[in-house]
Length: 217
Ligand SMILES: C[S@@+](CC[C@H](N)C(=O)[O-])C[C@H]1O[C@@H](n2cnc3c(N)ncnc32)[C@H](O)[C@@H]1O
Image (tube, rainbow, N blue to C red; front, top):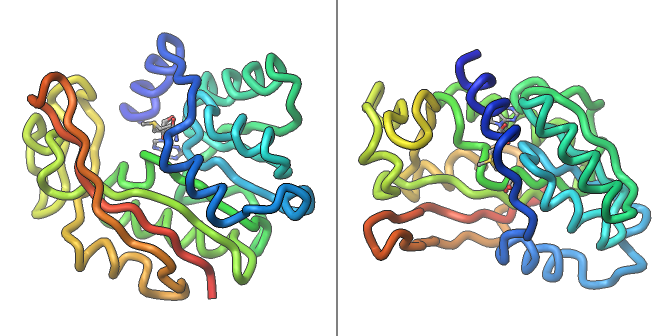
């Protein structure tokens, strides 16, 4: 609940508008032909402002967005409307998705699936698998132990941290390479796996982790 209050406040104050470059590249790689996208259903999971819902809708997908925060869902609707794009947005939790089995052709949990303890993250991955249609794609990222969010946090388990810095109160889990691969070993085909490392604030902070493209078997 503390986490939900954090995100409500966050989304009342901040809005990201341009998509992550990695997500733009994923869409171009996995769905190169525009006409093929119109029949496909895409879920921007943990959508935040909806910057990727806008990308997905503009790219032609039938677009849905889901976020923990009601304010985020409102922001996504407003963003889509401002851009003259179709799509819907709702409030809900990653580990209890309000969708039927096999609903989506693509699920995009970007910068969000690692929030919570290991059981919560595993629950979210299981829900992604459930709502993806066979052959459906997921593109996501996981933090690794050298991400500097871990350094500003309190360790509450071997891989689980409670942030005490800018993102105070948010619980998240980090994964080494074996753990990251293992999280998606069951029921998915791993299509692409890579490391990312981005320094910020004049090299005093770093976003570090793993990017995965998987398809449901
Ligand atoms: C760092 S933001 C990323 C937002 C967006 N994916 C992007 O790339 O701009 C993380 C988002 O995940 C959402 N979130 C966190 N925990 C969640 C959960 N358990 N269920 C659904 N959404 C969650 C937050 O509300 C927040 O909007």
